[in-house]
Length: 342
Ligand code: GDP
Image (cartoon, rainbow, N blue to C red; front, side, top):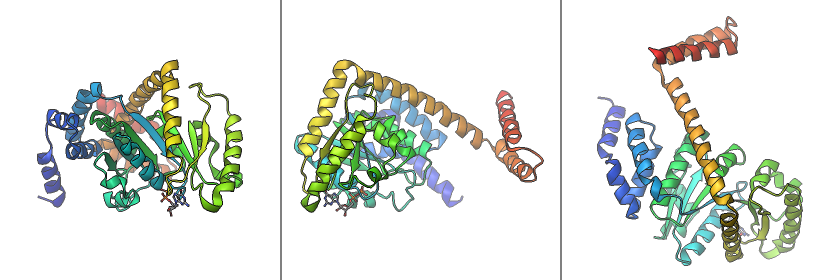
């Protein structure tokens, strides 16, 4: 028996029933929550089956947390801010979970140790739970896993689930599809073409924080606040009816944290009242279903051993120019559909 088989056998043996995971999670058992997240991160069909049942069982206990997305370029201070803001929230008696989306993360970068050192205070706080991004995965894979992990955290009773994106592109759109409020962190030097922040990302933001508004940077930060405020006002009023605000914070000095909390709580109040809160979550559920269909189809296609061997032949044919890429693709998909019929 090979190492891999032994490993996979051990993993199967350590799996519990969906009911056992559910009971632990609903009781707020964080070790059980961690084990359940490991389960939903697995792509093994046997694990997917347990995970599917578990998620269905927990669905009625989800939906009660504030799902907060946080993004910003590397170095803007996301980890420092989450560490400070998370600690601020726990001081108010709230429970905080932090998940990360980073499709570029490799095994070592996504390690628990890495995230624990990034958020020193929060990682030692019993009211908080930090889970790094699943390592070495595609964006689609990380998105599915993060969505499921988010629901597990909610069922475990966390008041805030913070989803951090470490990228500066596509992963923001993925996060936007699963959170209630999108917070964009920026630096005090707004002049530099608004710091290369993509227009699409600014347009998704429900609020912006100018971090590092401390010491000598305060005047620049004030100026940046005005400039970003003007830039945001150029966008049409979002469907939520909420005009995104810009605030100054210093994650290191823990300044501006109460104001940040007030801003996002005010958003929740307004959007709950005007119905946008529910509407956004409903459309996210539909999006989740559509993403899942895509995910299942892709896995079924690429996981099929007949297709895998035909794929190699097709690649050769494309390179030899005896098949056009589109013809080759159509042929493979047709073959797969026929295989499904048999
Ligand atoms: P991330 O890459 O976005 O997670 O950024 P980090 O949280 O790792 O912060 C990057 C650097 O900026 C670190 O050296 C932090 O100490 C520093 N930093 C973070 N927040 C602040 C702040 O509010 N003020 C100042 N002056 N420095 C900060």
